[in-house]
View 1: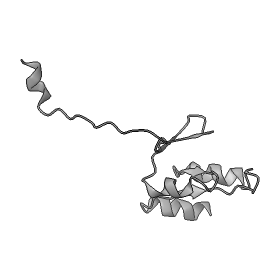
View 2 (view 1 turned 180 degrees about the horizontal axis):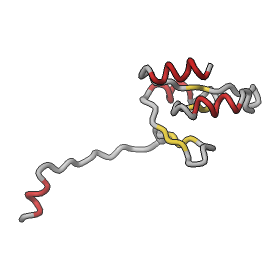
View 3 (view 1 turned 45 degrees about the horizontal axis):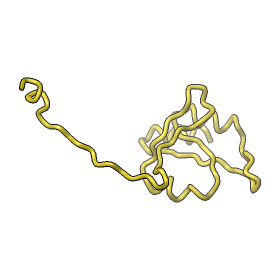
Length: 97
């Protein structure tokens, strides 16, 4: 399994692994297998089914804590209002004024 996962990853495919949870929300997977695939640089995580569609609908933006215990994921904040960004072109010329 690990050899195949490595081949998929090295071919340029974004391999995302969703781990199994029991009906009670407890891990139902082999931790050593998850760690081995994560060591290839693949995101490996588990969550309840509710956020799955919204997580897969946008490009996955994530990072892993240094200890490897948690994933930090960027997602929409409920009720948040996006502020427009201001882009300043030729800003060096403004410094000379």
